[in-house]
Image: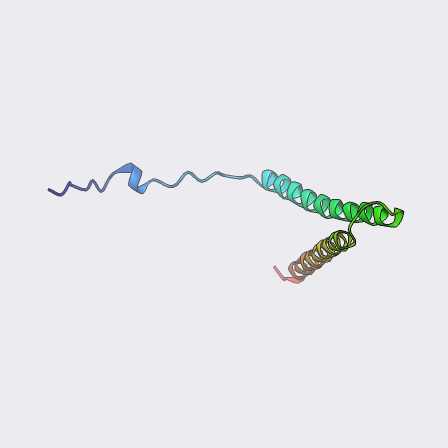
Length: 99
């Protein structure tokens, strides 16, 4: 037998538990995200420099590993610069908007 459907059931029509975020919490989350991303780019640059120095000193480092680290650092820096340029361009476009 089919059970009767209770249309007024609160669990069916209740809103999902959505976490409310304040502007300051979103701002701090974004600043932490941005800081972490820049730190990751910096770490890849440092790693590339360390491996290059080891290669120059004649330590036991494979040339292809040095080149891979160098290219990773270069690509991450270029991506960061492109993202920065897009953000600045979007900001300028918003500032040109008339209210």
